[in-house]
Image 1 (cartoon, helix red, strand yellow):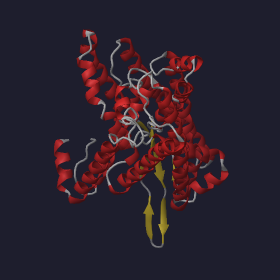
Image 2: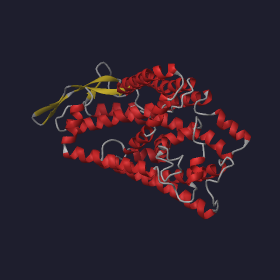
Image 3: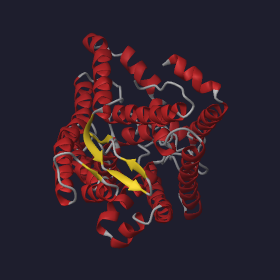
Image 4: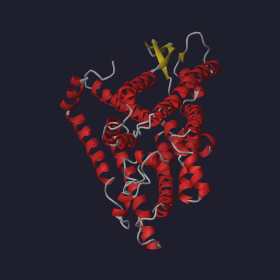
Length: 421
């Protein structure tokens, strides 16, 4: 693996892409420390509302600490992810969006444009909510927003929204000119930036059993994630030979790979976003009943973990159905002269693929829910101040594997050995 990394740096094109990706991620981390205008920095530092196991602590993790500093990139890239997931889900129920999706690159560009518009609206709405949340969480100290009037509130909201738009543009730049998916890499960088704090929490923890067992637990979770993420069912596909002019072409045997977890980490991110909504609203209203709701849906409490697990399972099935259509796959195989041995082309092939996909999705959905919940339960039982729970590990490992695959593809084009054997 080390020789492969060194080989990657010997190729000028890949070296430029890696340098460009690293530069954009570094700018993203710098922007997470630049405070927005109109806030009291000392009051922000004195506030402890982002500490502990509150929902703000979880959202702060996804923003790389920018939310606790009320920085320019405090919202992170989550509004864009939420908007893209909403648009993907709407393609199933809105005929016009489904038609655009089938129009190829032109239709995809139109859907991407709609995603950007929705991102701006979500970011603007979240910015307003956070401004009122910061005002209601002063805890008797100095006000975080000294001058709470329309001009200053509008300036803060505009700054936070502009930060999200800038992040969206930077993520698309990484996807186009760098290595990997830019949006996913930004979430990866946000979570990994909390690694030193997590290691400090592990070292300073008073539970000696936890100190000894935690590295083995983390290693087992990472190994299981890698094993399931790479697991796939290979459906054999035979292509008939065709005579074109005087030449015979085609034929041969290949396979159709169906992954155990075809949805990736999207269901986990979407479930975490949905489950963060009730406690966030509860803290925003700031009444005794609302605070009770926020505490009830705290990320380490059983209601939050149960609700997140159920949503992960539901979204895994739904997102898999959106991204993989057995009918379309069967029609494409039939169009190009391919068939599955022992299965008739057309509708029987679609039913066969649908049956196999349902059997694969069930363990994949259970795996996502278990990995998202079990590490959090184990960490909570030890009272450790270590927020690298299952959701974060799923995102980090999944993004790392996808990025390695893209780098491997770049290397294989130049006859270098890849990462994955």
